[in-house]
Length: 208
Image (cartoon, rainbow, N blue to C red):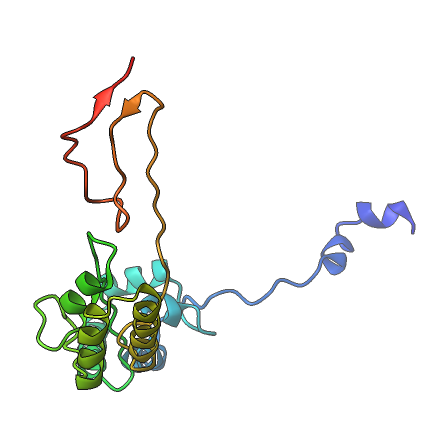
């Protein structure tokens, strides 16, 4: 290519890529009607400004201060949209068909009696979801009175299965915990049913 071409001021503008269309800056009643219509349909101001042919936010701010008629229509459109949003929120809150309720079942004793009677038995004080099953209540009583550990575990797993099937206790996760101590910590007997009890330490001493 001939370098002399680039020194010709008549040629350089012809070689430059064409500029894309800029945002409109000319105010018109038709444009504000279209803009307010987008807001009424539920768009945010940012989203409406991104639509083709719409003013940018800075232009919009200028027009609001310069044209009282536009300000009036703009405020009506925004107020109407916000009321629609509030109605939608109420409708969503009232529609319980697809709602999911999550409750936390805490326990300080690693024993099925404490967990089942406190959180899942009919009418229990911490049964926050209101779950109630006569069949499950019967199994809870059955496992509580079963002296054989192996048979009791089988009943407990049957209760867990029914709670999961009824969506009363879908297991999201199971936390794990452990206890440890220094070799010079003497006299402590670890409880077999939990890390959170048996810490009165009447018989504990430090051998050092």
